[in-house]
Image (tube, rainbow, N blue to C red; front, side, top):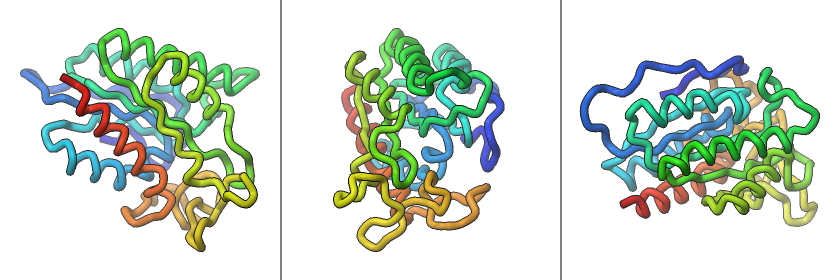
Amino acid sequence: MVLLLGAVATACQPEAGPPAGPQPRRVAVYGDSLLHSSAPVWRTSVEEQLPDWNLLERTLWGSAACDHLEQMADDARDGWNVRVVVIAFYGNAITPCAQGPRVEDRYRWDLNVAVDLWQGRGVRVVLVVPPGPVDSEPYSPAGRAALAVARERRVQLVDTTGAFVDPETGTFASELDGVAVRSPDGIHLCDHETIGEIVCSVDDAGATRYGQPIAAAIVAEARLVK
């Protein structure tokens, strides 16, 4: 499910708990517009390779990691049977909880809180390093935070930056191999001028570059679950 589409986040809205009775194993994904817009890629791949698993999708445009911490706590205790968690954030800092002097410090703190929550329940965690704005150099503040936390906490890391960097300039590109991989705003993944409620198609080059390695990590981690 998707919590909100095409709007800036103000808060993650919790939903009703899971149905009664035994639940299938689930992958829970938490992220912002990049994770949402690439969902046709990673969702299709995961559903094909893990037919006995269910996806719990928690994506919110414009959100930061801190916006999802309460939802994560609810999901962890409400009986969803989450066994693998993906946490993927571009580095938004527009919601109240994300305000602070340094984006990197804020994200590092919040990612550690999230990892504590899930590791304490024996859940496998995947952190994603996103591409930064077009023409910037790797890594973004949120990307550096994810790198540091993954290294310190020994969790799986998906570093998507290499798939979006022009090898000649060393900066994030809007086009690679003659194909658009980022939106005109220099942030999103779709090749169109209007973001809003438009979702990347499965064959979108940017969504594929972002979504495929995330799907591969989900499947790899799920297969380690006993």
